[in-house]
Image 1 (tube, helix red, strand yellow):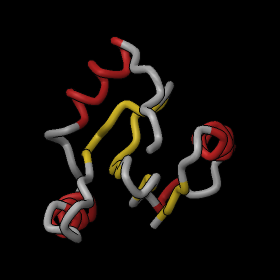
Image 2 (cartoon, one colour):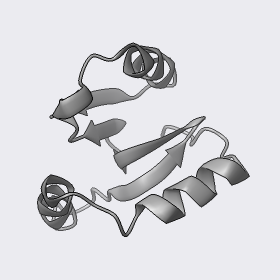
Image 3 (cartoon, helix red, strand yellow):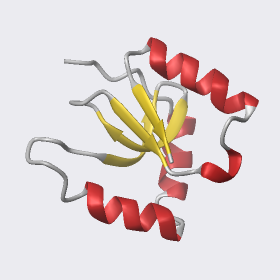
Image 4 (spheres, one colour):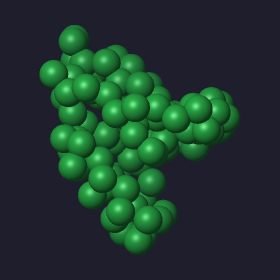
Length: 93
């Protein structure tokens, strides 16, 4: 099973601030992910390593980011490389 990367206190505070401010698309996806397959548990606005990601499933080693407006930005390339090195698959919608 994949271990969680260490959290940072700054990241935790950022994640707490982001949770109530979901976009319509994030709310729609979150409603589907909360009722996902039995045994799969997703977390919303989760601190994963140095990053706060939209949706994480540790059992499936999957991160889902419904953020097409800034897809392929340079920062996301660096983030993706880091999270992929930690064993995650990133799905950007």
